[in-house]
Image (tube, rainbow, N blue to C red; front, side, top):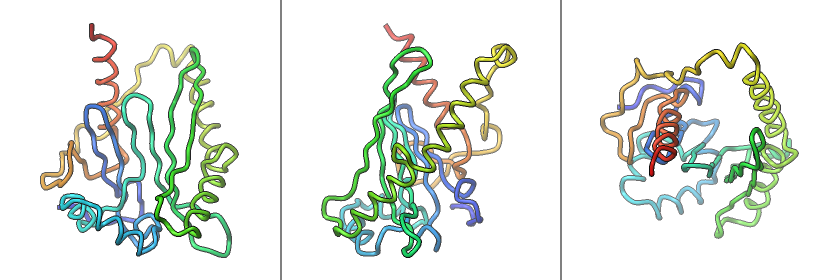
Amino acid sequence: MLPAQSGDFLLDGIQIAMEHFGMGLARQDPLFNSLAYPPKMMEAMRARFNSEQVAMLDSGVSLPTHANLFPNLSFLNAPGAYTAMAPPAPYMTFRVWRPLAAGKTEIWSWCMVEKDAPDEFKQASYKAYLISFGTSGTLEQDDAENWVTISNAAKGTFASKMQLNYGMGQEILKPIEDWHGPGNAYPLDFTEFAQRAFWKKWIATLEAE
């Protein structure tokens, strides 16, 4: 059974860990309303889903919020405000992280909208993406500053003498027994099972002949 809902969508989510794929799911609640997708679009999605995917939605889980396909393809699905006069609109962005040199990565980012979605929704979703996680988006700029600061701190003398701890959740969380989907699902999104799976896959790939 899934745990009771709290007020924090990160702590109250689900994290899925597989060898080559990691993903986070949020809970459905009035604020996110399945990530703010219109009811007609949700009905269309359910019509295309298989029985296991429908069962996942019926269990109280929303659509995926973030994911990564090994090694460098990422997805983000979230609602974003695009005007003060309308509710948030969901946007889906997928990204390729392209290493250029040591300490330098180029990010290719796209916004993806369902082909049969209403034109009004397509425009709202695109605007929400631009304002939030477009090149000059407010959240993108904020996250970029965080990553730059972390990278600079990791270059320091003190950081070079320490080992990173990727043990979050390891001692207290067990896989959800009645999970309908693939992989191991854990009843908390704010944890590092998917991160550990990523690095295991990374090391195995580097060491492979």
